[in-house]
Length: 454
Image 1 (tube, rainbow, N blue to C red):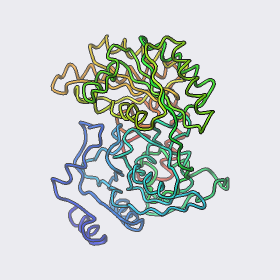
Image 2: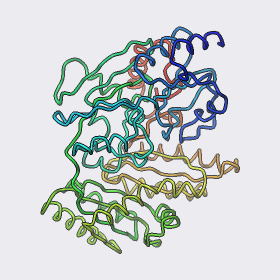
Image 3: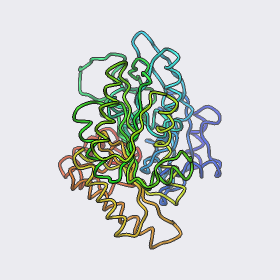
Image 4: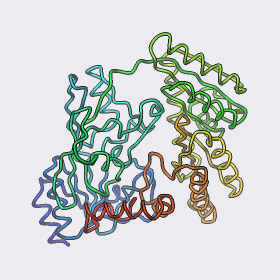
């Protein structure tokens, strides 16, 4: 492949194709740390759509697999490098244009979620999707997995804010889908097809995002509970009556892990903690806050704290966002992303506790409780082979548990490579076949992210 790679290098601007072994090593894995990651032939870092086209035409001509990559913060192994393939990183594609009249932003995929939020805030606008990793994850990666976040209980997930895309297909064809129109039903909904496709159908090089007026900084309610069931029951009652802007859950393991690091005075004896918020303006927001506080109290909360101070409220939100790094300090993690219907939330959490006990493992559960999307965090020592095997078994059992409760194997992290073995069983043969037919139609040579998702 040396001469072929030389042709690609010559066809692209200087520095676009990287082959330095030390740099290649840093692109082998995303945050899932897939132990089966390969070493790529090269990393390609384009800045323009035309450069992505050149790379994909070359890859198709030489049947070289291409793994699209954003910021490398994915948690399902979707950006795991392959031996002899190329990693196509969109990190240098960072242009953005904001139109305050249509309340849209046209951005390349390399900008971080936080950078998009900052850019549109200058116009008094807001981009709602807010993964816990929003400060380090890219818009391209968010598109790839249809990422959610803490406020999705009220405002929805990434796909709800994608109005248009420019996508480069496997053969190098660039296609524009959708655009800055709030209503457009001409043709099949192809824009939605690519959101969440994990780089298996094409490479997104431009995104048109819908924006909202700046969010009102409302009120926050934090409650501690002596039982997980009581906390879950409170969540179900609240979501049946109102739409809070946030409704987040942390179990005892997460509470104590965060308290070990942040020293906030969290209740170490609590079985669960809920961080809830309302961003409605004026009296409705106050009423929602009072209502949530009363529901928490009625369901036996041992402590309920309410504040309309934005800084106090943000401190608790930051604690929730810090839960994964805090638990990760206890050991290596297998990160789950299972979701269930809200009435099954308590059954899922209690079921995970039983799995942890059966396998003698520490498993923490944090959740976007308002929509039933949970993140069980399995802690293990990779140097302990037996423990790692128990962790892998628990990983599968948790997905089986979620599906058995009417849930899903992934709510927002994607299937990647870590969950691919469970996808066909979850979808069923007919839906799985349809997925593969779409993949084959758009990527007939199978060069785009082989081994991931579909």
